[in-house]
Image (cartoon, rainbow, N blue to C red):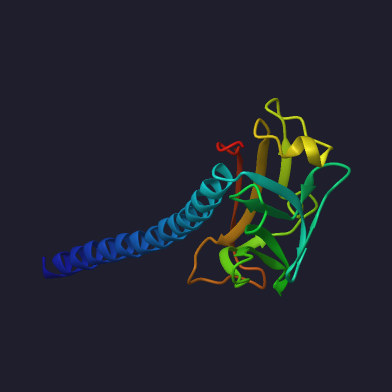
Length: 195
């Protein structure tokens, strides 16, 4: 009888312990996904607010403090310049930091002409052929614009694609590449304050 009771207690305690460990692993997984969702939500909300309040905007590339706008050809690039006034005196920039090479991960950055202090909005961005050109000017039908003059029209849309990866289990590394979850945010915004 005592042997049966001890064996049953060991089995019950083992079941409770394994359920607790499984719960801890699931909590890590949910925390990882919630962190990725929170980071992307902050990046999108700030960028969308700036796009909607822009009077002028340009798509191009940025190197240091030098922004180069695409004047001819497909309006698709790694940087977005937004101006809240029509005189073009102060700009807010959103861009991929192409010089940051930490395990081939990049960063989505923002800065402005008032202080040129870059701020990281999101990190661990994947750089591939499609995502290195993340900002695209489109018309209301989703057709990419090929003229800089037409792309700045308030009726047109700025299409943004963000692809990033994050550890699936943040405290557990498996192998040299670890375990990653892949996320993609694809959204469109248009300025609401035309001149």
